[in-house]
Image (tube, rainbow, N blue to C red; front, side, top):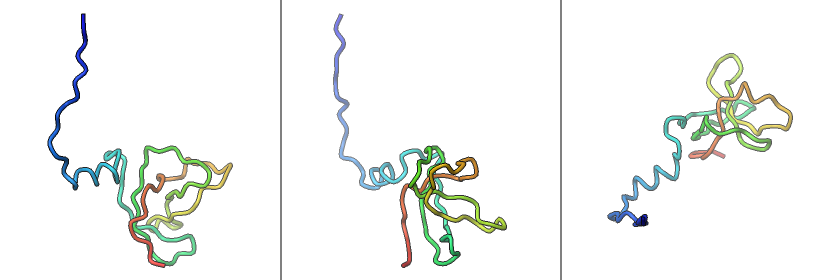
Length: 96
């Protein structure tokens, strides 16, 4: 018995589809959010993946105080990740 190993012949890839695959590897758990900095200034536009497990040093998103949107900051070692919304995978706009 033989098992053929054929590569599927695909046509030229659509650039838009490739860009979306690169930016959003897991679409059901990815969100586009506007976040505030910890000091409350300058909004950022970020892509957040809720399926990723955060590690110390990752930029993470969590609910802002008083329930007013989201804020992004670095995760500190020993911090409880249960209050986090997700891990930032891309910063699309950061006005500095």
